[in-house]
Image (cartoon, rainbow, N blue to C red; front, side, top):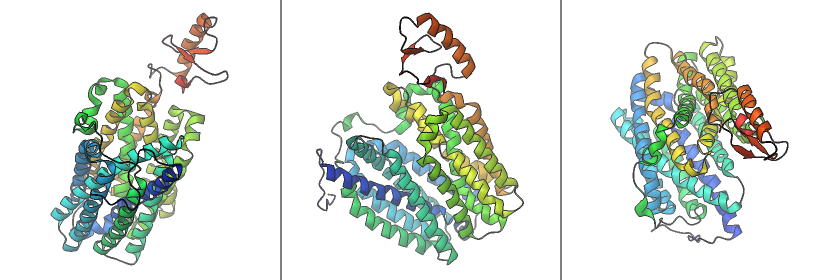
Length: 452
């Protein structure tokens, strides 16, 4: 039984109830972001306390990816079976226990305990992520306008707070076991208090019999046979690689390769997160103005310049500049890839699931690759692996267009469209004809979105 604290589940909420749920969800997203970076902010210290190499740390990080994978396959079923309110409530306790155990593993120097604790930290995080996003979508529907980016901006703010606390704990040399315990206890108390406010209904889905385990791998089904889905999936893989390498290795590279303290590495990663936050806040306008393809390619160039500068700069003062470019370039890759996957409303859910599975696979592969390479060369040079994903994203950018001819150039598209428009202008003067001869209704003065 989950306490309601005066906010019982309802299917007919008042406008005031929706507003309070919206505010509570912003806090809930922020808490999840803070808990995520609480761990990430202390990776250099964790590596030293566990006395492992870069490749050894990569193996330990793999257990977190496995936990996220298990959660991803079960989260949809669990949310439908138990309801988002109960799932969020009980997973809060699991998150608390797992993060405390994670800190304890560093105190006793046990990689085995760390691996088990990190598995459950990632499992609890992923099991929380699905219901909060489902509730955010419900609130967005009731508000009647697009407010989802605000919730994810709240997550980024929480990440910034977690990094600031981590930097302070590192500066004052607070042991991770106490740092993690204090943060997660306070965060859990706040989280339990606001869950009944944040979740408007959150009751189990009566159609749960139709739900099954397997997550995106089960939902995607035949979509893996679509060439366009596979190409967008490759872009999502590159996006995950770009963000994941920064999250897991950036602060450690600052410590090992530039001789800085851990709190300085936290500040550098905070710059990365802040750059992503600022670009995402204005991202819709940028994409509307430039189009998906140009935005994706510009982002890839920004990442390439930033990562290369980080890897080769002889002076530390250029590192913040490099990370700023890297974070700005990483900001819009995920939104563009998932938006492109959802272009066809009839197949949106399956295609988004298929694309999301690529980022899950990246979580299993990328930490291992960086850890192994870092055994032979400096860590910041190993991080040049990001360039492979960025170059692939640049080359495959046309896959995010809605046109079926994804490798035909814009000029060729315009030539193909032009003669068809001339041939059918009299029949439908208010439509644009694509390269396949299909009419696309448009308002006068609009640009053909299929050519973006």
